[in-house]
Structures are given as C-alpha cells and as structure tokens.
Amino acid sequence: MDGPERIEHRACFGGWQDVYRHRSAALGCAMNVGVYLPPQAAHGRCPVLYWLSGLTCTEQNFITKAGAQRYAAEHGLILVAPDTSPRGEGVPDDPSYDLGQGAGFYLDATQAPWATHYRMHDYVVNELPALVEAAFPATGARGISGHSMGGHGALVAALRHPGRYRSVSAFAPVVAPSQVPWGEKALGAYLGPDRTAWAAWDAVELVRVASGRLPLLVDQGEADEFLAGQLRPELLREACTAAGHPLTLRLQRGYDHSYYFVASFIGEHLAWHARALRD
Ligand SMILES: N[C@@H](CCC(=O)N[C@@H](CSC=O)C(=O)NCC(=O)O)C(=O)O
Image (tube, rainbow, N blue to C red; front, side, top):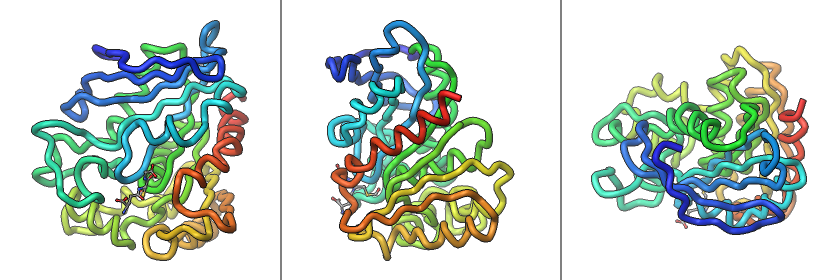
C-alpha cells in the first residue's frame, strides 16, 4: 500500500491476520485496514473479498468477531476489511453514533462540512483495490460483502459498478436508505435535501435501473432489532422481483443484528464468494 505501516501481525489458521495503516488520498486521512492473508498467499495469487462493517465499527469488529479467517484459509481468499469512515483531527464528526466518524455510509458526500473527507465509496471501489492489488498477491478477482450499513455499501458498490465485482453478499443490509431513519439522516447530511441525488446510493433504487444482473445473497435475522425500522428487506425483494434481478434472501429465525449472526453464516457467504471468484 501507499506508505503502508503494518501495525498488527498475528498468525491465524495457517495465514496472517494483519492490520495496515496508510494515507488515503480519497479520504485525506490515515486509514486502518485489516488484511487476512490465507496460507495459499504465501506461494501464489488469491482472489480478494472486501468486507464493509456497520455503524460504530472500525476494522477490528469483523476481524475479531466474525470468525471468517477459518473459511478464508479453506478457500484461499484474501480478506480486506477497512475502517468505516475517515477519522482523525480535522475530519468532521457528529455526536450521534449514526453520522460522521464511524458512519461514513460508503458514499461520496457532496455537502459541507462532509464533502472533503467523506468519500468512502471512492476509497472502497477505487483506491483500496488499487492499493491491495499492488501490495499483496491478489489475482484481481474481487467480491464484496458487509453488514448493516456495510451491507448497504457492498450492494451499492456492486450495483453501481457492473463487472468490477464477481460476487456480492450482505448481512442485514440497509437496503433502502432513502426510506428509513438511518439513511434519511445520513443521506440528507452528506448529499443534501434533494432526494433525487439519493437514488444513486440506494440499493433498491439501483436494482430498478441496473444494467448488470449480478446475483445478490442476503441473510437477515428475524429477531433483528432493526428489521422493521431500518432494514426492510422486503423492499429489496419487491424491487428484485419487479426488475428480474436474481436475489437469494434468507430469513434466519432467532438471529439478531449482532456479530453472532454474522459469525453463524459467514462460512456460507465465503463459500458463495469462493465459487464465483475461482471460476
Ligand atoms: N445503537 C447502537 C448501534 C450500533 C450498532 O448496532 N452497530 C452495529 C452495526 S448497525 C448498522 O450499521 C455493529 O456492527 N456494531 C458493532 C459490533 O461489534 O456489534 C450502538 O450505538 O451501540
């Protein structure tokens, strides 16, 4: 990576769970990124799965809670898990947990004071893959996944850039930010009050106009405390049905919004990505 500093390095399932810190040009700040290198990366190139975490998370939540490394080692996948927003002195913030640092919403802000630093979409889809593919033994085959706000980010990245990702999945994603309180607050702040600008950052709206038809895998816990108020997977199902977009939406009885839910199904998601990424 550009000026990378390896700040964590731990043996994990025969590979290495590292954290790098680098200067991001897109975000105008230093960023932490978790990188899992499976054992296969020691002697060859591997596909990369990008993981986007949710509100209040850093790069640490996924790498310490999801248990994904075991499956990445099995399938020979590099896992890349960035922090969820720009951070640091000079980066605007908000006292609430769902705006500002830790809540970048994986979009490119257009409004003051956010527009200078809050460019997480550009970072995730452009800068980070370029850095990863230059610094690590990556094949160039990319998948993307995420949880909640990060599930929204993964769906939007894949739908906006047909061909850039070979696979996409999400856990409890915010599928229609234009229609729920988390999204209305964030999109209103980052993009301004004109809702026509919001459609480009809303998976339900993007499915309606998508030129590619990359299949979507979505898992959603039925006991998720945010299900009815913020997540509303039925809106994605309706949009996919209307557009003829392939969607596997699995409602999982008893599961809440936590990383216990993510950990329970991450193996199946990595198998889904591995199948698409090795072809
Ligand atoms: N009110 C809560 C909200 C924070 C929360 O639940 N964050 C989730 C993601 S929610 C959507 O993006 C999360 O992943 N938390 C981290 C974890 O390790 O579980 C609060 O402020 O606590």
